[in-house]
Length: 346
Ligand SMILES: Cc1cc2nc3c(=O)[nH]c(=O)nc-3n(C[C@H](O)[C@H](O)[C@H](O)COP(=O)(O)O)c2cc1C
Image 1 (cartoon, rainbow, N blue to C red):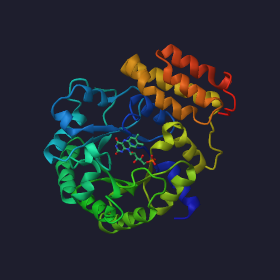
Image 2: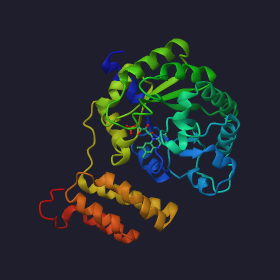
Image 3: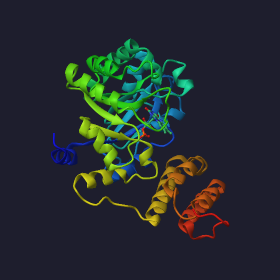
Image 4: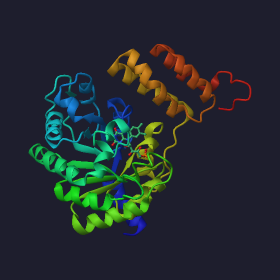
């Protein structure tokens, strides 16, 4: 497809997805992204075992707030029966503490988390080493998704390490087991989040799926920070792109991509708009989780919004010491207008 023709299609049909990020993609942030052009968001990862044991804290992850767009719930684990049960619990909301303002959009299975605590159980990217088990999990979860009329996606990595790249074969296996979509984070588990992605693995995965499982969609992920980054993956043949860290201080990235696709000048938030959005996020997180947890969680998150602004180092330091929401909001309102330390430029 020619680039311009591709742009038209993209404007209308592109799957612009917010990547799941533990500690970040909660309801308030997902809602902000949805308001800014994101067409689907994915929850923080939710443990299937914790759902099975009715863990109280886990219920707070199973929420969809008023005003959110389509939300897919992501589960992790390695036991096919427990994963199917987890999907069922999340799709029905049959769990004390679940709160849904709208139906979940689907289920995603985490096969990419590189954290040792997760992989040592064979969960997350541990499943990249056990493709047969990964396929069994998909086979077990699929009928649950079908019963509720929801799509099933899987999120994989390029492979475990550079000597065991298996995303193309794994994607085909998972598609043939019933996955409707594969999202590929184009790095190995060993590469964690280091800069640079393996676009050649994405190309091979697209080709493999086209040949063996053409109904399965593929979404590219990794280091998408601009419209041009998104376009690179879309031009390769992805059905969509999934954005993680690029959205953390810039939830406008989704509308920026859509505007660029429409040939418009992409929206650029002002310094004030960035501080105001950080303030909105804090208010909404506190409303959801209470002041103590809300403030603690908001420190790092607000830092993304103010990164690079005048006086941001000092602002960040003050935010780290703010004990109440009133204090937190006052610092964001004041912005970089307070005096900088000698030699400090931002
Ligand atoms: C703080 C953080 C938390 C993450 N949590 C999850 C998670 O819960 N589930 C998951 O599949 N991936 C998780 N990821 C990986 C992202 O979804 C994404 O694949 C990765 O960040 C690469 O995309 P990016 O370069 O756009 O950030 C996390 C990444 C970060 C930085």
